[in-house]
Image 1 (cartoon, rainbow, N blue to C red):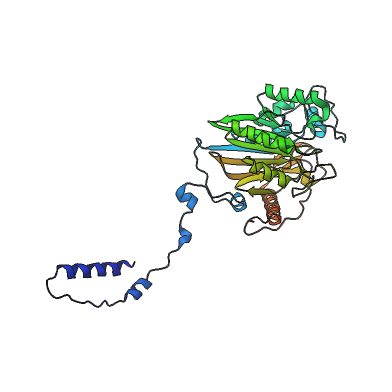
Image 2 (spheres, rainbow, N blue to C red; image 1 turned 45 degrees about the horizontal axis):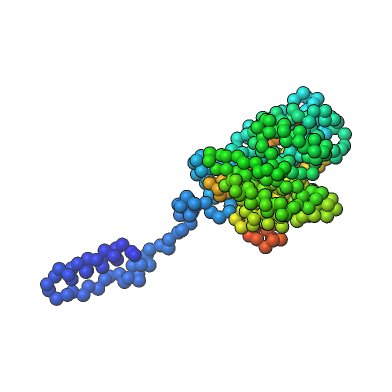
Length: 394
């Protein structure tokens, strides 16, 4: 209501109530319509968002993930961060160049200060580690690494290592057992071998399980039971998968390997059965992400430590940081890396990082369009394939 008109009306009422004379009918000089018309239309655009005013985060969406508006409260009692890397394969060229340098921390040196700065750092280890592993940069698909690489994992702050993948068994059950024992002895829990890895972060428990779907179909009965078991032991259930067709931006089955499962179908089932976040790896390219029933699915983080220098796409990966407020995921960010010298990831410069994130967003929108889900706005164009960077770090 226009305040001048309101005051005039109030004064008129007071006057007629206190006067003993005959009521006086006053004719306002400005009609109510005219009085109200001078009030400007409210501009709601300058109002703080609901999330800002209420302290409650907005619903998770691709838009909020890639163009966040919610500022996570700086409250360490309620905020926990989960950092996730792509594939780590400390074999072949990586093992050779680390041995030549006599430095098993070498692959992790440029990124360690960042990767250790999280409540939980979760890696995917795709090679058994044991003494006597052959060291050769020659082309091979049988992977193993020196046990001294565990010092690199500790240096980068690894808390949990996923062992459910298609290369950990390259040296049989003995290689798997030796790797598991080595990691556990050095304070790094493992997922993917059956038991739930549980980490308590200031009273909130995270439970980690892993499943391999490369070369075999994922056992859905075991998956559902594993999620149920993790739910009994933890407040937040994290499921990591090794899945999908290699060298693709979209999550796809690969019947030729065979990798028969559709990652999208497996991811959706996992959320339906109680997973809080789904982590994907194996394709050696980073892929788009999806928000399904308010939960985040990451289909592939690309390579982290590996010697695949033969294409720019396989040299690139993202480190994901997933921020929880209580048990709810409220934010995510991705830090792009590029590998140099056959095994050392280095953070990209600002321009290349922006291109990588645009590629990731465009891939997410392509997936959302295929699944008839909500896209970001405006939808970015997919950048062209990246040019091959110099072999040695600048």
